[in-house]
Length: 289
Figure 1 (cartoon, rainbow, N blue to C red):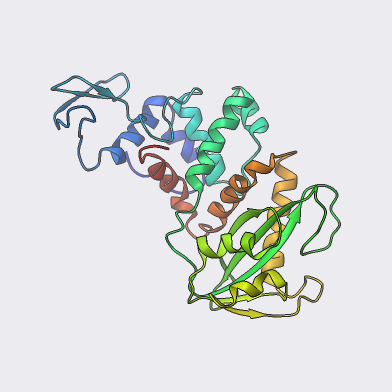
Figure 2: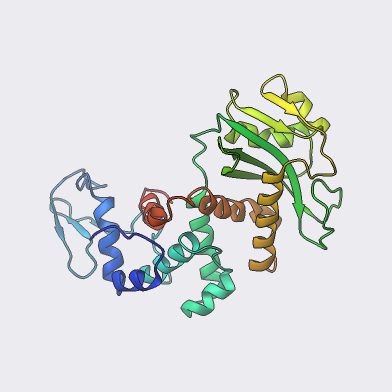
């Protein structure tokens, strides 16, 4: 089966009419390098027509195309699971688990669990740190919106540190986020360790929490001007907060980063929307999702 391309809903439904269509789409990349039995390491097999599972010719261990993947023992059926992946990756804003459950006529709890599995698959590999210009700043969301950018000491608000890479034309190239408990250098260092190279040109405001990191990174500090200094950063934080508020009625603090990973995944692939769904499906076929 050819790779799915684009964001067209009609094209999607034409390609994935049945569970078997989805299983075929999973089987091709999963065994692209050949079959190897996980029990006896034999390479010869028979394909079961009902579900395209591989039946080892030696020990007769049966492995489904979805075994040990993002779709492992998915309770809602693989076709509906594919639909969730499509909505979360190829559409602009995705939707909440409650909305998704109603659309697919499945339970909200099962949908919520699978959507979090997808968000885990969306998490950055952290293998490609930013090496160019990057702006680092913090923001809060949750509770009553005070319309002021930057930090807040309100304990009811959720705190986030963001790293926004700026391209040569001054536009946003990609962005990453980390949930933090406070604005200390220890908390802020999380995003530096995960996403920023020591060779990057880092721009921050004059918050004291950045100062201990200046010996490790090339940091230039600029007066914040009431949080309005970095236009690109403020644009991104406005968009992510608007998305969180408009899509989700509530989220547990322990899951904030998963939602931010989902946002980053789509934003950082905005120039490759034709392949975003296929890449997420293929990545989710790696073992142990």
